[in-house]
Length: 308
Ligand SMILES: [Mg+2]
Image 1: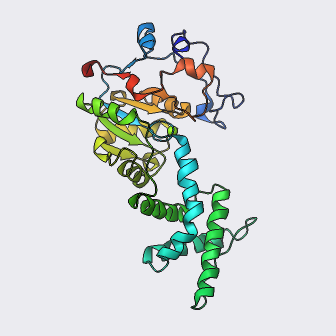
Image 2: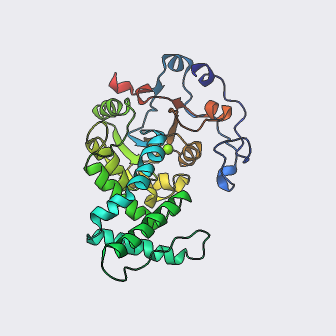
Image 3: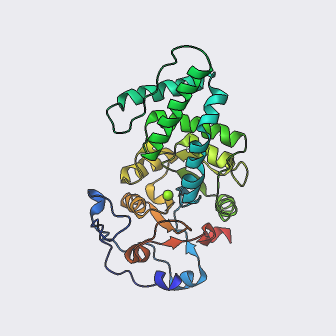
């Protein structure tokens, strides 16, 4: 990889929609990357496997999926957990107010979805008795499975999932997976006076569960704050300006680490420093993206002059 990184940047990648894995469907991000990398890694730094943190950076902003955490954790642990345990969860929590609110919201969503192909209605409990309860629970389970098969992101589905994950983390059935270089590196950055923040499309609540019940224990103390898409989409540069304002610094005081070039591009548009993280299981980068962005495959490659 080092050999590729020290090459002079070639023509910028074209986000033309074809031949680029990260190509957006269109819009502003479809413009080609025109700038040369502002802080190219020196051949020596590349050979040593380090990426110097640009002077002036005071805060490191971290993406989660594909950056601190394997993408597979969400796809192969979190979502299957819901599919496999929703029935059991509903039985165990059915009488609780929160669970009844979740079911009510799913029922409402099911009514809105009634015109969709394969939609699964959720009947009201029309009496008491085990059979009636079974009938309704079965419908909720089928509805959840149907929505998940379509990868829907309805509030109703997300709310139930959030409550199920909260219970799963709290009881130790699920632990947030974190790449092993992450915690030692963040501790070092903090010792060097760096602030560290999370910015993920997963909700702040989901982030706190992941890092509060992680394979490395409760590591929430390592973060100075959390952002999710309430502050704006990760592919829009304005989001990075809002984050800087919220932190109380300039955008160029921030280094953003992400696995997604479109996010890196948006951050860079806002004058935020970026490095693209390569992790096992991440989508591949085009040759142009590899040449354009500073790349790291471990947080330990970030070199803080003051942390030697
Ligand atoms: Mg990511």
